[in-house]
Image (cartoon, rainbow, N blue to C red):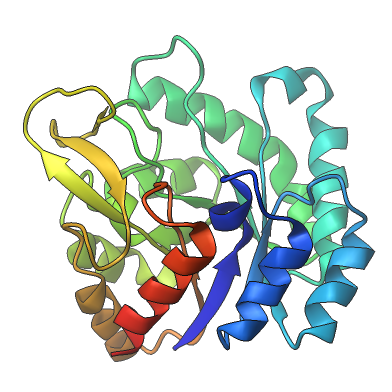
Length: 262
């Protein structure tokens, strides 16, 4: 199985640079890297850094925010051109719920309109356009049903399967098997889970409360995900995602890789 550096995992802690993302990935023997935005850098520079370190650009992830809606097409095209410069075959647009919209179906409808508008740009560039299972009680895409309801409105849409996020709404293995034909990229993530509200915990679709954990230390069975992906013949990359601050991010990625490689 091929693992890729999720640059967000390091960059979110605020003390790492794009150079650190490349260095850590190479030191840990990872094969790929997923550039989560370009951090204001020239994508050609990021591509060269990646290639020089022996890393394949597995994907390029970017955001289309509410403030971008008045200039949606140009923002989307710029990000897709960045993906081409990076030579990323897959793009992921993060389906963040809209402010003040508390109905998952309404969030999904609004995202369908956006994705339908920008899908032709991805098709022109031969990019696989994906969304991920995104966490949250009002998220537009958590379950397989959610994804296929969105895909019915945007037929070319594919999925970046996130095992931890899928598990906030349904059995993640069943979800993976159902969606596998449309899976183009994979994220691994872990959570601690409780059944009551507490500060620092997020309410999810299944009515329980979640807090980010290191892969292998929480409640998500990533070994089962790995086994299922192998059985299904998945030959793409797996991002290592970590959203806590218990460990420095480079140490967290190392620990997660060691756990999964066992």
